[in-house]
View 1 (spheres, rainbow, N blue to C red):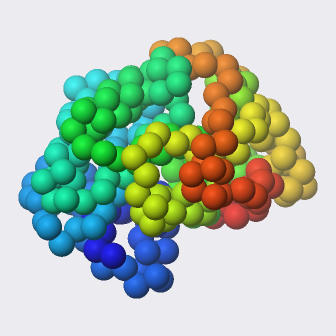
View 2 (view 1 turned 30 degrees about the horizontal axis):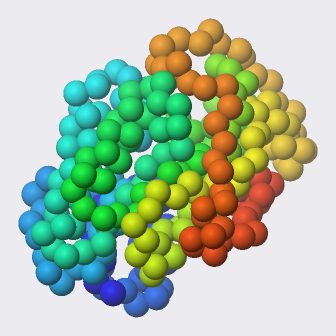
Length: 261
């Protein structure tokens, strides 16, 4: 298949592109950071599918600059939907489970993006849980930061802002969900996650257990940098199991052991 992947240099995009190349798909790649980015693309009748991953995904950055967040996440999604419609291509959009309780600017932009896509073209909308594992150099994601703090507590002290519970899904399982969405072409909204809630402290204790090293944490007052986030946010995986035939998923232990900084 001939596939356009936006956000190809990002965390999910990098892993997805490697998988698609291994299966001999013809790819075109672009990113928000490219000199020729998603806003400059024109329709291409050769495309069978567009996988739209490009977004401003940092919750604090979205809170800090709402104009940039809406331009990248909502207007960018509209352009991709129109591009898919004009190209005759199926659109796959990486949304977020946070749209279930949109209490941050990031979640609001993802929910708005879903709306403009649905109003423009048929699409597979994947509401992703917290993606983790694999190569991850992010300084804003929880699990890599905990691993850094355990391995090098002097240079990377661990700061904890809450004990919220989240659903963590391995990046390989997310790539599998995208890959099956490419193959099946559903016009549907599908939650992608494990259905298991894990608190911040439970993640800390699992990392400590795996590495057999101590970890100290500094509790920080909760500010406005992440909005009013829900205490528990968990995917409902039944649609994923039914529509994408994805059953057994990697565990939190698998995620932590596979995390490469």
